[in-house]
Length: 362
Image (tube, rainbow, N blue to C red; front, side):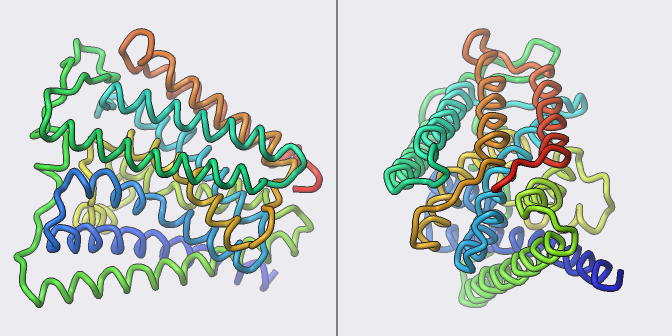
C-alpha cells in the first residue's frame, strides 16, 4: 500500500512538472523566436504545434531510449485519441465559446491524420513499425510543417480565409487575422535587450528540464503501477498518462474552471491564440503520430513494436474520429456540435475497451 501511495504521488508530481515545464518552454521559445526576428506566421506554423505536443514527445523519447516501447507507442497513440475524443470534443460541445477554424486547414489536417493512420495500418501488420513506415511518417511530418507555414503565411498576408464554426448563429464566412491569427491578441513580447534574451533562454532550458523530470516521473510511475497490478503498460498509457496530459487542455477548453493560479499561469504562458485551440489539438494529434512515433523508432534503433492493443483500438478509433471531424466541413462547410458528442462517445468506448478488454501482447 505504501508503494502504491508513493507511486501515485510520483505520478501527480510528474503531471505537475510536465504541465508547467511544457507551458514555460513553449512560451519562452516563442519569445526567443520573436527576439530573433522570426515572423509570427513561421512561429505559428512550427513552434506552437510542437510545443503543444512536447509532453508526449518527451515521454515517448525517454521511454524508447529505455526500451519501454509499449509506453512510447501508447503515449503517442493514446495521446492522439485523448486529444481528439476529449479535449477537442469539449471544444466542439462548448456553447459559451463556439469553436472556429479555417475550413481548408481543418480539412487538410484531418486528411493528413487519416493518412498517418493509413500508414500505421499498412506498415505494422506484423506487429512492428517497419523502416518504410517510419520514413513515410517522417515525410508526413515534413508535409505537416509545410502546410502549417503555408496556411499561416496565406492567412497573414493573403485574402480572407473561409471559416467553419459551431456557432448556432450565422457564422462569419471569413476569418480576419486581427481576430484569429498570430499577428494580434496573442502575446505581448518583451523589449529586445540582453536581459530579456538571457531570461527567456533560461526559461526554455528550465522548462525543458522540468518537462524531462516530469516525463521521467510518469515513466517510473506507469511501469511501477503495471508491475504492482500485473497489467500491461499500454493500459496506463491509455488512461493515467494520456488523461493527465489532457487535463491542462481541458482546463483551457472549459475556460479554466480549476482555479485562479493555473488560469494566471496559463494566460501568462500562452503561446497561441485562444480561438485556435481546436486546430492546435488537431495538430497535436498529428504530431503524436508523425513525430513521436518516428522519434521513438529512431531512439529504439530497431523496428518499433506496435502491440495488438494499439492496432485494435487506438489506430482505428483515431481514424474514425478523423473521419467524423472531416466530413461536415468538407461537405457542408460547417462544424457541428454532434461531432464533438460522437467523438466523446467513441473515446468512452475506446477507454472502456482498453481498461476491461485489453489485448494480449500489448
